[in-house]
Amino acid sequence: MHPETAAPLLTARGLGKHYGAHLGCRDVAFDLFPGEVLGIVGESGSGKSTLLACLAGTLAPSAGSVTYRPARGPALDVHRCPEPDRRRLMRTDWGLVHQNPRDGLRMAVSAGANIGERLMGTGARHYGRIRAEALAWLARVEIDPARIDDLPRTFSGGMQQRLQIARNLVTLPRLLFMDEPTGGLDVSVQARLLDLLRGLVAELGLAVVLVTHDLAVARLLAHRLMVMRGGEVVEAGLTDQVLDDPQHPYSQLLVSSILQA
Image 1 (cartoon, rainbow, N blue to C red):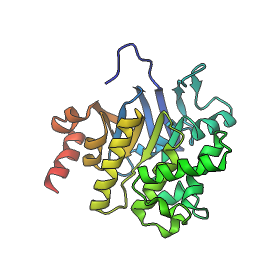
Image 2 (image 1 turned 60 degrees about the vertical axis):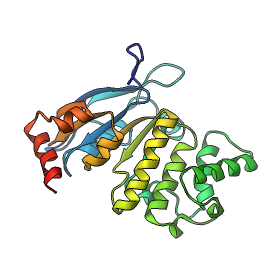
Image 3 (image 1 turned 45 degrees about the vertical axis):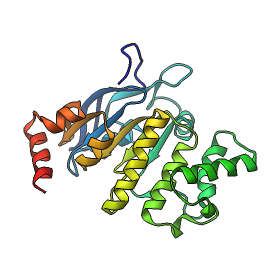
Image 4 (image 1 turned 120 degrees about the vertical axis):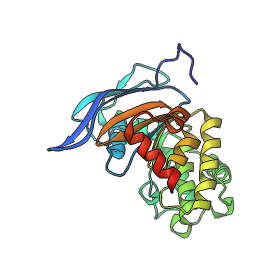
C-alpha cells in the first residue's frame, strides 16, 4: 500500500482529549501514509468524531501530538503551529467533508462560487479559469454543469454532498478528513456517492481519515481500520482482517450485529 521508505503524511502520538471527567479519546497513535485510507469505526459516543477533530486541528487535544508533513518544508506540529498556517493547510493541503453538507458549504452563494472560493483562497484570480474549473468539477461529481449558478439549497441532499466534495477537492489536497460522509442519505444515493468517492480517492492518490459507524462504507473505502470504544482504540489492522476475523470482543459484536441486521 505504501513503500517502506515513504514518510508518513500524518502522525498521531499519545493523542487524548478529556472534557472534564468525560473521556473523548485516549492514547491514540498511528501513522497515515500518502494514498492510504484509514477508517475509524465504532458506535455513537465511541470517540470517533472527537479524534477526527483533534487530527484536523479544529479541537485542541488534552495530550499528545499530531504531525503533518507537507510536500515541501519541515514537518508541522498541527496544534503548535500558528493559526494562519493551520487555516492555510485547510485551504490547500487538506479537505474536510462534513456529514451535513450545509456545514461545509456556503448556502447563500452559487454552486460555482462554492468551488471557486477555494481556488481563490489559493491565489487564483482569473475569473474565466476559475469558472471553467468549477464547471469541470461539477461534471466530475456528476452534477449538471448547467446548474453552476444555482444555490446549493435548491439541490438534493446527495447533490449537496457531491458539491461539498468538489469544493474540497478542487485544490487537489493531499489529505482528506471525512466525517460520516454518507450519513443521512438514502441507500441508493449512498451507493452512488461511495462509488464516486472511491474513484476520486484512487485517481487523486488521496490520503483519507474516514469516520463512519457503517462497516459497509468502511469495507468499501478503507485500507486499514481502527475500532474505537469508550474513547480507546480496541483493535486495529487491515480492513478485511478486522471485519472478517475480528479479535476483540467489541469488534466481534459490531461485525455480528451487521450480519444479523
